[in-house]
Length: 205
Image (cartoon, rainbow, N blue to C red; front, top):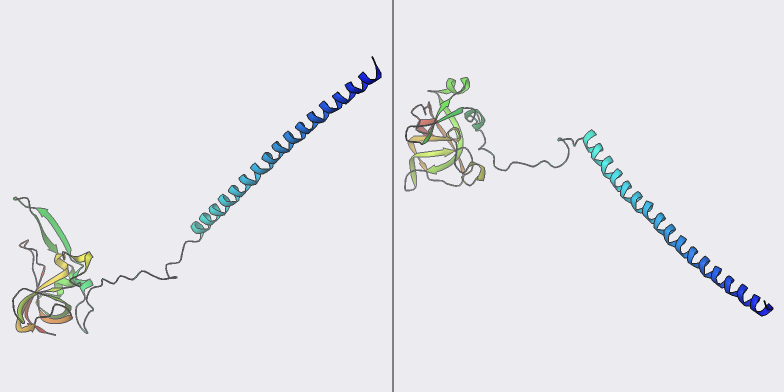
């Protein structure tokens, strides 16, 4: 073999080896970069999960204190209790027992508490909102509501949340302001008529 042919063969082999080496280096760098990227990505996800899990565990271990922070205030409250008067919380303590009558209508009757029965026949004072039953500027018979007329949670007042008022002294018709009524309490509703409380001989309190 001539010397020139030998030199050409060596040069060709060196070129082939260089090309293969370059391809190998590029392949290694490609897989190495993917291998490095995957743990980093997984690590970030795991760290986020760990933080979230730790936060959840911390919330379970340390529940929020109901005495702290801004409390949600119920703006739909019953009328305030007048001085020396009867509260709506006492009146609302009555239990309503319901049944379906022969015609298929739902009717109810009351189960009064001992405190409520002790007030029967006595003059009490209660505050609330007027729901007039008569036309005109004066009312001798009306309903006293325990909650504001526009309250969405008491749109249909339960029998223990209103009082039928029978006045001996007419009241000015007032649909807006809280009024105080003084009257003799009758516990009723045993006829399943839907009225649990009635005030007789009522007058402005």
